[in-house]
Image: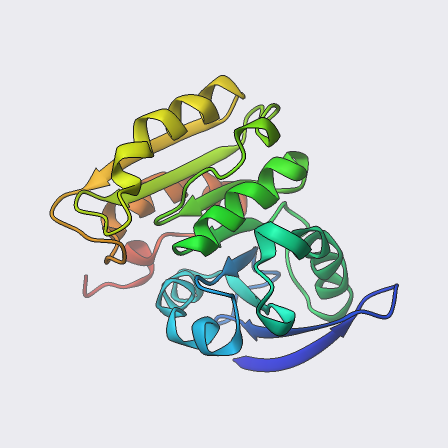
Length: 218
């Protein structure tokens, strides 16, 4: 099930959100917030929903906030994400567990920055790819799960930053699974068998099964 909705925050700010739920019945699915790349506008939100689609198929509810007037979430308005989550909990039946942050390209960087601002609010981050823009804001990530992937042949040379970024995240206390994707450029397909292994402990805590367990044909 999918819907396009407008969330009105307490200060009167409105945020457009694309919201997707699993087609098969999942009682109180866990929530994932997907940050798209570019300027996080509606075009990019829809064009890059392949990551969200995979999560929905695995039993997650996925919300994709659309940035107003192309303002990047990690630059100006990332602080609205906790408020968006609170409103989604009021209008949808979703798990009370901490949500997951997902991001592609600059959306991956946004997901990392948003988690760094309020690390206790999130169960983890999937940044594929993503990079750290302001190292000074990454200081207390105790226990935060981070899945970080960058293409081996990244067009913007983010591959050269992977080791440094992973070390900074670990120094801040995050539990980091970081790796280069062989022969990949800036945007790439994820290895879902590998990612499911990373997600499995989080899914089990929420009473979910992996996609491979749900499908007898895999």
